[in-house]
Length: 233
Image (cartoon, rainbow, N blue to C red):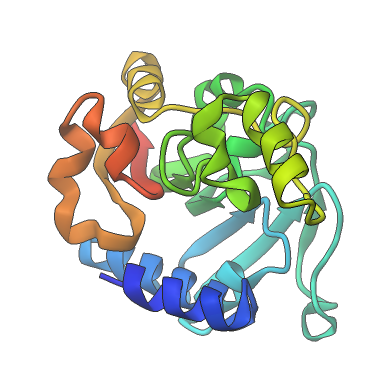
């Protein structure tokens, strides 16, 4: 359980590199506990990689990592690393190839067409490959990102109230670069996808309480960030 460490780190330093390294390392340990052996033979894709923190932590375990995002924000140390330019909402992700592990961390809530991505995700997975899908569901305490908890006032009223009361610069606007998503809907979409199978589901920052994800309605509020492991059917 790292939720307390993340909150403390964010209060002191906001979302600095250490904050994201905490997240990545904890997620990788969970993936390994679930049964995936990571090493030199593991071909991994960090999809929606941002500044590549997750992929870099996989590289420390010897994995062969390819990075992909709409823009190349890799640090200078990764200048020679494989990078593929892709817009997940618009482009055919089959061009990216197949991998033993695909990481899609904190990306789904920023997609206008998340269901399309889920239904095409099997194209990225090698036989016995896994997709790690993690995102902040809308009704979680951090569902509105920087304008949380005002998002509980509604998709539009929430950020407008934040702007009036707080006035701090805001990055996210619903239906522009942040889209409400719900755990129940995502789980149903995966189960209806003929080429996917749900392997594990848990709250990302407290995976020990995995049962929460299986409680309809309550899971939407009690899960700060949902983490799923998905395989090819």
